[in-house]
Length: 157
Image (tube, rainbow, N blue to C red; front, side, top):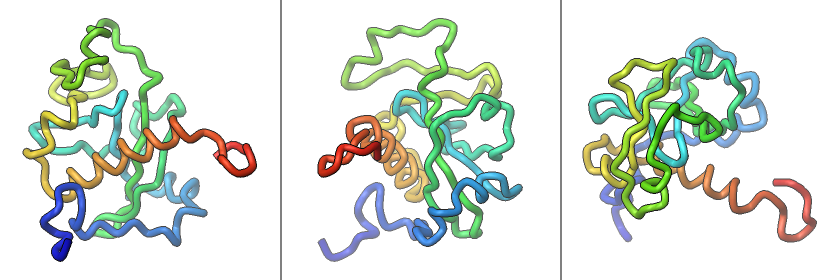
C-alpha cells in the first residue's frame, strides 16, 4: 500500500505520543486532556462527531478502564475510556449480539442528543481522525479483553 492516507482508520496525522505512555496517569489530570467514550465497543457521538469530554467530567466519577491514545493536532492529550460496566436502564440485549446493532444508548450524565452508536453504522460519516480514534480505541479495548495475560510468562498484561 503506497498511500496510507487513503486507508480508512489510518493516516489522519494523529500523534500516538508513545513516549508519554509511562506518565499517562498524570496526563489524565491535566485540564486540556480529553477522552472519548466507548460502551461495549460503541463510541459516543453527537451529530456524527466523536465526542471528546474533559477528563474531569461527571461521567468519570466512577473509575472506568482508560487508555492513552496520544495527542491531537492541537497537542491536547487524548484518552479513551471503556464504560461497558455501566448498565443502561433498559436496552435490547439481543441486539447487542447481532452483527450490526441498530440501537442507541444514552448515558444519564450526558446530554440526551449524545448517544453510543455502532461504529459500523457511523464510520463513513466520521472525519478521518475520528474514524481512526474510534477504531483504535475499540481495537485496543478488544485486545485488552482477549489478551489479559502474557502468553510467555502468564503475568497480567
